[in-house]
Image 1 (tube, rainbow, N blue to C red):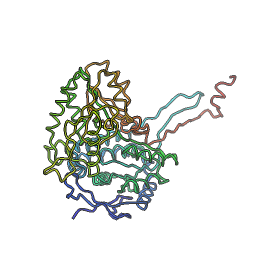
Image 2: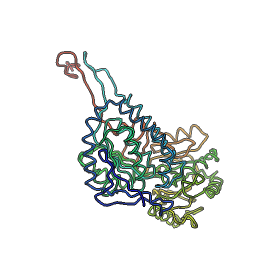
Image 3: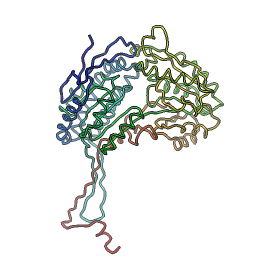
Image 4: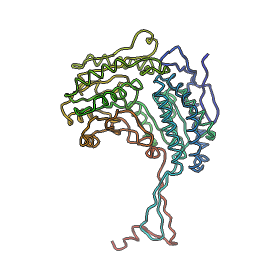
Length: 498
């Protein structure tokens, strides 16, 4: 019988949900039931937010270096349990073990990074306009943070959000995706073991329209951090805008890799394969458009198809597997639907894949690595986010045309250019409309100490990770100390005759 997992509210595990329960099944083998989870609603959200609100005063008064020590212990425990967590994440969302180990390592890196911020979190000290007066700025916590996370990075993204929230002195309620709840349970167990006080971190399972919406709407939530689709992000922005609630949105992507005629083709093909088919294309930074100079397009296309054919599909728990399944049946149907759209679009040519494999893989949600050629900016497969192992090749005649094609998108998360021309590289950095640009590297591979996020429909201007992650979860306070012993009137006293 499958294990029963619970919500974590005010330091207690509660397996009962007011809206029943749901099963979590492996996408590689849907007969493998990982666990039974509570389907939560307003009742559980109310209890979790109340617990976080009650824990807030003591936690926010805890010295930031002390909060950092707890995060360091979280990092130590993540390191200790790295392989266990990776296997659990692979089992419940599908990507290969090498990638889930990297997922956990991101969490470890994030823990140590933000633990260090407990001894920094720099403000500024500045001179003031008047004598015997001191000016500075400091960070203050916002309050209770509501974190809504996706399934594709079940450990890394919850840590990207929870660690900066905690180091800034906030408490939190986490709602993970229904396709990867078990990894979030493990994270909560580690928080508990590391000594995070009761009520500071809370976990509530459930769906978006009910559980997630209740969290977003709760009047005691001070900040919402969401990663997911642009459509859902717009609705969250509408709901939080009415109450002037802080809202950070990390949304979709339709990322492109440019390959110029002078590029190292071996390196460019390796990057395209990893960018397009890593995580089975289920990354917001995945390479879904390959913009190639016509002088090398034929060679690159042929070699890319040949190498993609050799990628081994299978259960991600097997070390030899290179491409795991899509996360669920709905996602497989979505990807298959886009492949049908691509084949119907005038000019596009399916070179590889476009379907689910048969044989022993047919019981899982697998999909073959897919390559389209002859793609143009007017096509849906060029413009719309597919979120699967599908890449479209676009031929261009010049650097300028390549940049224009890359920017011809409503998204702007990640981007890449392969070239040996340093001038082109710096022009690309300047001209590409994206939050992330790689030179001679694929569109995937973020590091925790640099800002992560994008422009256009990819988000609402905030950035996760690095120092910028603190900005989401803190308020700036300006402080003036006047030790003159008299009333000083700033600009009135400094310019009395103007």
